[in-house]
Length: 270
Image 1 (cartoon, rainbow, N blue to C red):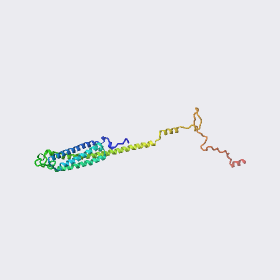
Image 2: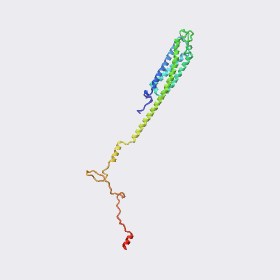
Image 3: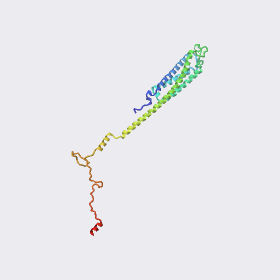
Image 4: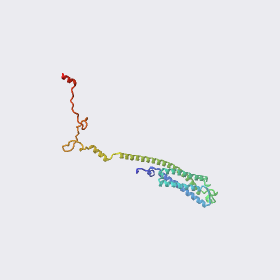
C-alpha cells in the first residue's frame, strides 16, 4: 500500500538520539585508535631498545584493536544500513558495546598491576638508562606518559560505552513505539479501505437507480384503458364496472319475487 511506511525508512526527525549515537561512535573508535597507535609505537620503540616487555604493552594493543574494529563496524552498519532505526540491530549494538566494556577491563588490570597510574615500574625493563632510568626497571617520565594515557583513555572509553548502552536502550524503546504506531495506522487505513470497498460493492449503480425512477413515474398508456383528451393524449380512467363483491365474467342472478306469508293469504280468502 502506498500509504504504508516502514521503520527502516522513517524520517530522521522521529529519532533525535541517532545523531547522539553517531557522535558517541566517533569518540569511541577515536579513543580506540589513539590507544592502538600509541601502544604500537611504544612496543616498537621498546623492541628497538632490546627491552623486556611485560603484558602491559601487548594487551592494550590487542584490546584496542578489537575495540576499534567492533566500534567501526557498529558505526558503519548504523549509518549505511539504518541500523540505528531497526530494533534488531539496536539490540545487537547493545551486546557489542557490553563486549567492548569487557575488552577495556584487561587493559586496565594489567596497567594497574604494572604500577599505573602512579608509576611504570612493571611496564618494561632494559639496560638503556635514558629509557629505563638508573634502576633499569622503570620507564622514564616522557615514555611513561604513553601507558598513563592508555590507562585513562580506557577508563573514559568504558564510561562512553556505558552511556552509549543507555542511549541504545532508549532508542530501542523509541523504535518499538514508532513501529507500533505505524502498525496501528496501517491497520486503520486497511479497515477504512475495506469499509469503502464494502459500501461500493453493495451500493446500486447510477444506471439502475435512473431506470427504477423512470419505471415508478411512467404509466404505460397503451395498456391503460380510458378516453383520450382533447389534444389526443391518452388518459387513464379506472373501470368501475365490477363491484367489489362480483366476479369477473359472472351474470347476475334472476329476479325472484317475494311470496306473501300464509296468514296474509288466509285473511284475503275470508
